[in-house]
Length: 123
Ligand code: AMP
Image (cartoon, rainbow, N blue to C red; front, side, top):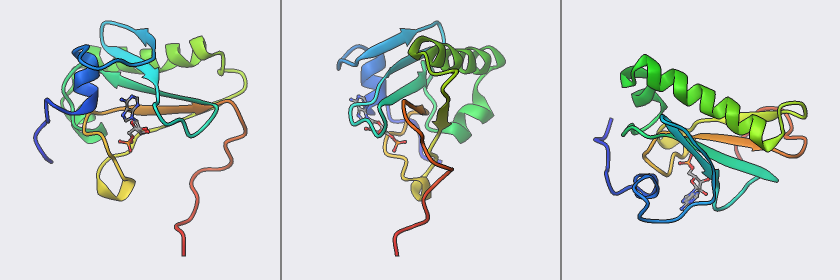
């Protein structure tokens, strides 16, 4: 796995060097609206620690960081008012999943019927 790049866009958001449309901030996590939403609700939740991807976070983060992060995802869904209607969370890791930003993040999609799981690849 590549080393963490301190200049990735989410690291810059965490340092306040570039703006974001913030939904919530906790001790362990930040949630903000995706700049190119793919559903009526599309929020990203990121840990404040420097982790390249889900694999890195799950392997290295401390228990309090993991718990705090998961609770922030749940809190984001509550704040967005989508717990009853439903939502999908998704984390891309690596090239086959087209991970673009090398700071671990969970996408939270909601606001319409999201269909079932993933589309097959284009032929
Ligand atoms: P991924 O392919 O899982 O790495 O997703 C990266 C996501 O970050 C994409 O959905 C982008 O639209 C989103 N994104 C990139 N730059 C920004 C930004 N400055 N503010 C909010 N979302 C961003």
